[in-house]
Length: 628
Image 1 (cartoon, rainbow, N blue to C red):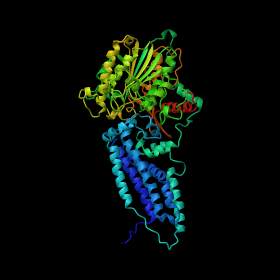
Image 2: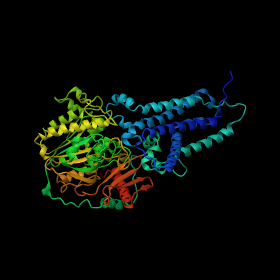
Image 3: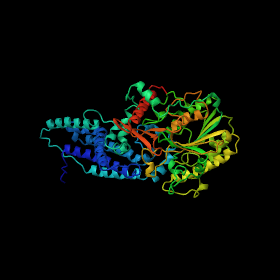
Image 4: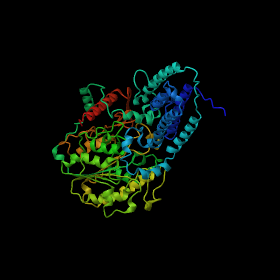
């Protein structure tokens, strides 16, 4: 039988590179198509930029991951034609291509929760995220496209790859000079591709050169982002301006100074604090934030409570629970790709709200219905000063617990856990601070068997869970109202991060992070609807002022008290290599100023850009040097 001729080796290697690029391009396309509601491409010019950016980042990705393969196959020696050598090289080709494909496929589903590319954090996250094994079947069914589409691409890739063969050499010719030249040229091209250019190596924030920063995830990819973040520090000091100038701009960059409200020691109040953090709650689901007739609101109880509360334009400082809990309790936003408590700076000395309240006689407790140890919440709570952490273990040890209270995946359903919390709080001496973090409104979005069918389905399964949690809150407040501590308690209700952004209004810089932010005081019946942006890091200084402790305490962190600045607020957060600040517009309260910084690119007003740069510079310096 006549032996198949094949193609020349250097044409073969070129085709192998193009095939790998094609796999990555297909994965990028799938990622975009299944996240259409998140990305808004402005026109053909941005489409062209995204395509060119994909070529640039794709070449860097392929060159980086396939460097061992190409170096093996470019070596100017005849053993390249040995079967064993070609087999080893083929493994070094196929495995990296599949490794490029897998995280992009996974984030096709996960991106809707975080709006970020995967980073090296994934290696620690998998170990602290609870019962990942029990979640796997739910993920496989609910997010079938995250594995089916990569599998289809992988099968096509393996088939096409199996059809590529290179031609055996004629041993009677001297090929060495040509092979040496090919080795030198090929190695040089490989290095240039991996670096992304001649003058300087490609940086992750360079994705913003090709499109709007908010669409940078369509240019970069998860495998490359994971690789690069493994070898770069979590933070680097910035020098946008002199250190003294940065401190001054950050300190006095507001329309009013932070000391505009003078507090006296006579205003100190021994009020209890119950801080309720709602899992994945966004303003989008709530009637008190959406008055239009066609809004699909799912919070009748919270809407009624808002009529007797101060309601702020709440904003989260991150898209992960661990980021939200840290921001609320320390006043420190997460302005890097990995949560502060999981980063190299997790041992920094920072003061938490519960630790400060303990100094003034408060008993402090954190209630979370999930597994003890999930996402290191118990360790984080201890660090920021809570007296005790009560999770699923403590709940199961209580006489009121039942086996049916467990949702089968994450922890205890909200209704029974909130009842347990109300009961446990009743045993505390006053004053106390109790922080409650709910669980149920989280994938796979379970509903207790006894409530099946009570809460209507919607365009997303989270909606019925939001409605269930709202019902659980109604029951919690009904129980709390009968307790002697109720009248002397301030209730603060906020989200850990926003939900899924089901409408265009909630899928942009100004919408992705909108959460409820409500202060309810049983001693006051008046309602206040404030247009002030109230980010999570503002809660710490605001609560300190509400309790009258502002005269005695200097609040650390980066937040601003809403009592001292009742009209103006801002929100800061970190995206895919970019920083964003959303701030109130004093001239038009219904509109907000958007400021974005990504690498050397800046969008926004001059003063806002300067303030955000000063904040980033201060943030990086203080965290890196443990000066929080």
